Image 1 (tube, rainbow, N blue to C red):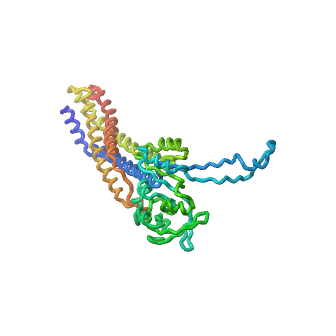
Image 2 (cartoon, rainbow, N blue to C red; image 1 turned 45 degrees about the vertical axis):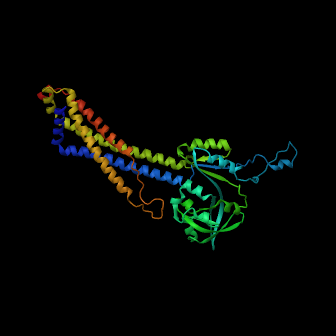
Image 3 (cartoon, rainbow, N blue to C red; image 1 turned 90 degrees about the vertical axis):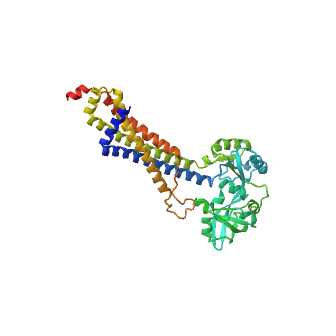
Length: 417
């Protein structure tokens, strides 16, 4: 073993430039793998966090489906042989509230899988500020429950969610909506429902999630204020948002709750299926490109080892003539390949970490995108373990084939020329 290792060392040092080129091939392959996968996983994590900051783990609501198959005209035409055709029928008056909402909420709070429950009453409104009128939505909530589900405190740019508790008819607005209306903290804004009811609120907080469709249209007020604005009683609730202790069980839990309460129950994965599909595509692309880089580096090692063996044919013949067995020849050249792979992978991991860290400190170019200050990068130890393993296995396979070829060389035929 000692002699074989010494011979392998002599070969590596005799061709320093060739050894360095092979090692750098592995180094840059591993470095690009670490950089790409750290960045892509960071992007996917950011997208998921953004989704969850605007989507509850489970959303329960009354999904009204109007049946146009029956018509009240049948009550006026008693002839059973007559064919009644109604063009453009109008739906009957329906209510969107959840029946026995208080009882359902109480049961949900006792469920061990559910961390937080937030009742919600949402309605379309027009925001009026002087001559400016903007269409949007207002959510009536128990602000402490809502803040826990969506981590609203971290999204606040001015004020805190608890301001709603101390203010009489206070409102927390999206940053984009407030800018459109030229509103600041303490200003008054009038809201008008499609039914013509109006109510004035004072701005007590501003938030920015980073999704323009939310920041430009949504506001939060106390649940009782929206019930009053809509002319409904204190039991009128249209939606229930849930935060689970782990969102991995959201889909089966949503199905179970839907069957239990006979209301529509959507999980966060179903609500954001297109975004999750994009995450999968990016993951596959990242792994394909990264593994391709590693395989290319492996072929580079194979070519170098093959050339080394061709140049060392006479040395191999002399070694075998002196009594070295085929396994000794394999060990000599395979150890060279493993040395190149291991140290190349170690340098690649260091370089990859430095590149990923440098990227994580680069400011995101859009300053108005409050939710993201720097490029998202995730430092996961599993990526480094995988990179090191792949950086050793690939050179091992690349060096094994020429090493086996060298072990089968006939020394007599080589020495005769």
